[in-house]
Amino acid sequence: MKRTRFSEEQIIAVLKEAEAGAKTGDLARRHGVSEATIYNWRAKYGGLEVSEAKRLRALEDENAKLKRLLAEAMLDNAGLKDLLGKKLVTPAAKREAVARLQAALGMSERRACRVIGADRKSMRYRSQRDDDAELRSKLRELAQQRRRFGYRRLHILLRREGVVINRKKTQRLYREENLAVRRRRNRRRAIGARAPAPVLALPNQRWSLDFVHDQMASGRRFRVLNIVDDVTRECLRAVPDTSISGRRVVRELTDLIAERGKPGMIVSDNGTELTSNAVLAWCGEIGVEWHYIAPGKPMQNGYVESFNGRMRDELLNETLFLSLDHARVVIAAWAEDYNQERPHSALGYETPAAFAAELHKQWPASLRPTGSAAQAIAQPALMRNKAAGL
Image 1 (cartoon, rainbow, N blue to C red):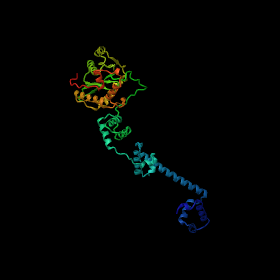
Image 2: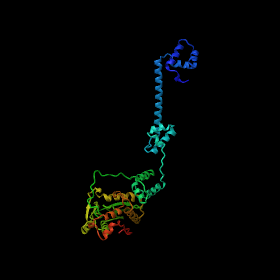
Image 3: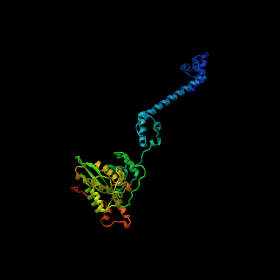
Image 4: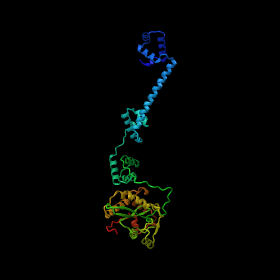
């Protein structure tokens, strides 16, 4: 029998009749209930008034509601603990979490969506995109070849090969394939605005010099003299050797000037090789202005420092050099690739050689060099591979 057939008032009235002397069997036949039901009513409502019976029913209903809410809260809490440590950001992750709650805790889809804050419409969505298997394979291949390139440079390489793709899609596929480059160290970023370089936007206006160090598989250390054009970002020279003196620096600069022409300024730090008598005498003879940065301020020579960082990250840390000759070959090939193929973010993702050639076309006729200097500036810097190291 459903409890809704009799209200508290009716039950109390039946019990009053029983207290007045009516037989239980007669009351049961008259009201259409069993004698056991009347005994249960007497055990529960015996001696109560109507108002007290209503209050008891309200307390029972409230207690049942609180128990239900507590059970639901405990179930939701168990579901959240089961998903602890999982990032529920993307729709795919939320769909996976809803399926997990339904399978493990028997939750309904509606309740599971409410627990994790997901829209039920997104649970039924099925992607209509192509799997882009060929594109993903090409992206992985390029990332394997250029292990220190991020998605922006890989996007430029894809576009060069004729792949028409949006940069955001490249970023999405790059992230889904777990190709992100691990940063080796935190970078110190400058605070405040940086003043532009006080030179004309022309090649050969300012060169920067600096050394970078590494060691071979045998443990023998060597250093590389890097010379960079600050405007075009070209690597003009990358000279590896076990020892590079001031005279060696002068010889390399003399050969470079014969190929490209004389620069307006050369910038370097205060290393002993670069402050030697050979360098100072050479500057006076050839008439080149040599600027030394302030001690302890490497960012005053930021262009070549940035180049050194790229060489360290993309070449030196990724290569095991077997000998000095092997280092010369590999470094020369990398410098050629840096000038000809590698997109440079500071140049609008153009290569330094292409940027220099385009810049040469925009020169006024009065500023264009002639002879061997013009031929050298229009082309990328030449790299020498001398086995003797002289």
